[in-house]
Image 1 (spheres, one colour):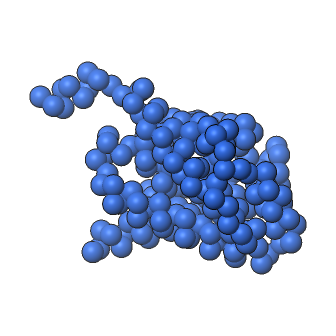
Image 2 (spheres, rainbow, N blue to C red):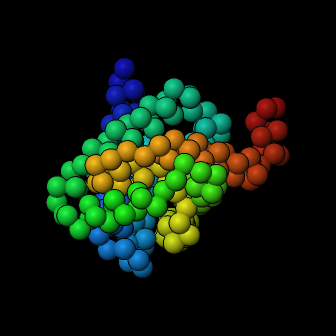
Length: 198
């Protein structure tokens, strides 16, 4: 029970950190917003918080239980949306920007592809952090934002700010998951895995 509670706490913590980056993005726009957004993932990694898009690519490598990954996702989504609602009370300009952003989303294959590509970048960013450098985060986060790739937790926060819902969040979650696992599969060390089996 204590472990599950810690799991939820760290999921909420991650959502709060990412929400700060998303608020900056909505408030400041390009080119400053995407750069400052990186603060969110840096905080998540350095503070050991649980972010779905930073965990799903390591599902097999870290032997994460599917139910735990689902709890992380649920914690991120609920806390992220609530943080968005809080932000919607602070600035009408940010709300307008969020509504405009949501209006550009679609439940479509191109949107799904953008979600997959975001998942690829997220895996690389966290992988590089685990290897001892934050450069993957510092450059990777602005990269996916400038390219228009879709991040499910950032998107749920934006939905909260806009006080609405959009079904594209479903394919965004799936795309982030697939993109991260795809990158894990392509970059995994087969020789190291064989050693572990022995």
